[in-house]
Amino acid sequence: MPATNGMIRVTAIDAVMAGEIAAAFCAVRPPGHHATATRGMGFCVFNHVAVAARYLQARHGLGRIAIIDWDVHHGNGTEEIFIGNPNVLYVSLHEQNIYPHTGTASQRGRGPGLGMNLNIPLPGNSDGAVALAAWDAQVAPAIQAFEPEFLLISAGFDARIGDPIGGLRWSDETFAEMTRRCVEYAERWSQGRLVSVLEGGYHPQGLAAAAVAHVLALGQ
Image (cartoon, rainbow, N blue to C red; front, top):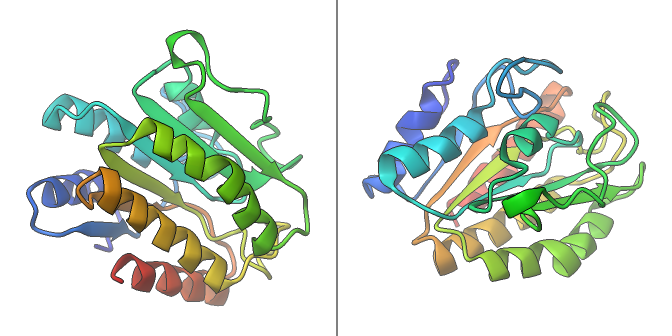
């Protein structure tokens, strides 16, 4: 479901909820996960996944929404919006010690949302094997405990090897494997309902290859 404006995030949500499609990838620009409720930052103007999560709860009456963010940068805006919300699980795998210099593992949420924020900072120059090992140890148990009713992905591809902004070395297969795991979670707990939204990616050829691997895995 490619589009150039943020309205596609709501169209995709409605189509999945109506059973017209099982899952969707929204190729939106600009990206969104750095945007807070009150300001844009880091190339981001509106936080697409945050709007989608709120819309799922307000319009479709869902309770538990999981957001998995694998952009190379921490989604500080998404974290800030849901930091105290017990009904939204936010998971971020990102490179440590880079912009926006947030996303420490010690930030687990606040108040009623304590435990609903999972940051997994990864060492620079690490590859997909490191990310998938962290996924096995932390992401999978968190999703299993939460049992989401809908799964949203902040699909950044700037962790791919060769990206000029990111410092991780993930392959296209890393993104495909993460996608397959998300599809499995959606099928197990969310009636297969999943919407993925494009975040970062600054090497055109690399972005295209990783996005294709992601979309193909969504359809498997």
